[in-house]
Length: 172
Image (cartoon, rainbow, N blue to C red):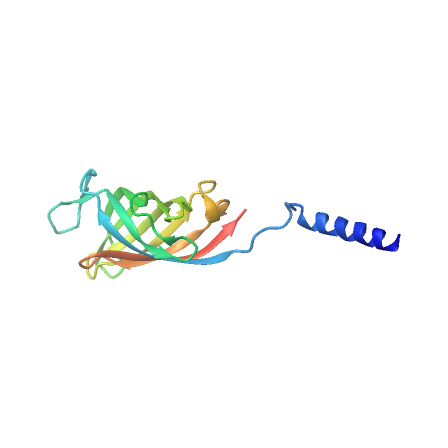
């Protein structure tokens, strides 16, 4: 009888330990993605006005490839960003830069991914890029389900547009 009570008690503990407890939350996890962007030459052109220069035009949509933690290799057929607004500004040092804002989606080959909005500043002087990407809540799939967070963007647009996205994912 003692053995039966012991087995029954252990079974209760195992079942109670395996139930879903909504009070437990996931800790933030560090994430880094190295990306390369290529213009989608079928996308709309947007004007870019740089003070002291002629207006030039940029493609509005860029296809993204690369790889990163938790996402693995990026599915470049389904990963992109779209520039919705591009404006020229003058920095405190007197040099012009371009501020882009928009939205996009990044998806791994395993179909895990999320949607995001972003802003970035690109120096006209040295073509360095800095900005932020914010994950759009409730758009994550797979490992990104329930994720949110603001991640840093750092990159360069010399010869090839590359950038790194790095920061912490937070889960609901």
